[in-house]
Image (cartoon, rainbow, N blue to C red; front, side, top):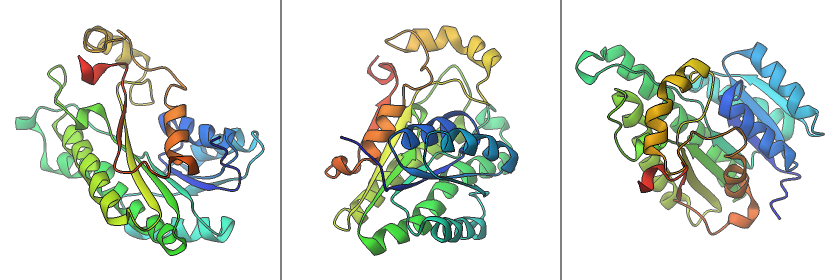
Length: 251
């Protein structure tokens, strides 16, 4: 079950952190993987890890906020693999600036990366999936798209991820009878490049207070969710907003 051999997966923001983990998780199940990010040198390192698992990997330099670069990435993937079966929209980021102080350009930057970038990739990679009548789209949202956070001023990030959640629902409805499922994964706090050791340490108290499991997520704890949503067996799962948060949203 959940064998992805013969599938081609695209993972954005795959040079570090969760994107790297998602690429490796799909590769372990047999998928060939195209990894997209702006930093080509980082992609090369991840590509070696993916290929060591016995599958093919295509690193593609791509800024997902640039439509032309996304379209070029689609063509590069088609030239290399001939198709696309799975899209993981992971590229994203945010900033901690209070609403009343947030510069308009920073607001636009965060929404462009988190929301617009996911839309561009979903639209252009999705066309390939729709043409053949099969696909799995997984948008990486956040628990902060489902509710506010009193400990940190994350208005732009929370707004963007809330948009990703409802964009997922609407896309799922529009494509529900066309063979392409669209779901979202909402993690809580995980270590990443932006959430380095010092940041995770500084946030530890409120993460433990908020989470039923009293801890942040660990590397690998999102793998099963990604693989499940990417698998052919999840054909009746669409418009799902899956939390992987140690019970955060239940408290």
